[in-house]
Length: 131
Image (cartoon, rainbow, N blue to C red; front, side, top):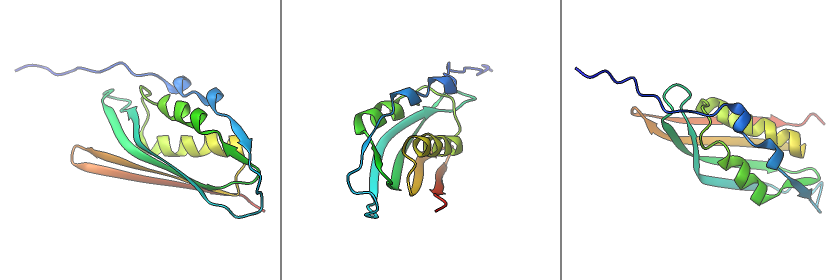
């Protein structure tokens, strides 16, 4: 009987490119504007097997005075591509990185991950600024 101990190489958290993230001015602070970005092709990998995790990441926030520049957000999200990270940690990491960059009024990051072994995962992390 063959032994299956295959494991794909994975990158560590240091591969998550937070330095690529840029913010741009938001000209309507105080307007209670809700911004939503959806990445339907998000990919990271299981930290134990290196097998891919696919999902949709939705970022929803009320900006204070800054927006995330979209090209930088795309590059940032793509930097997770080979990172070995749990799905629950993906969502919280994105929330923390964007919160640090933007200082939003409120932010929610939701990950809807495709089924793996018959189980789908939905993770939601929230932040609300103390005013």
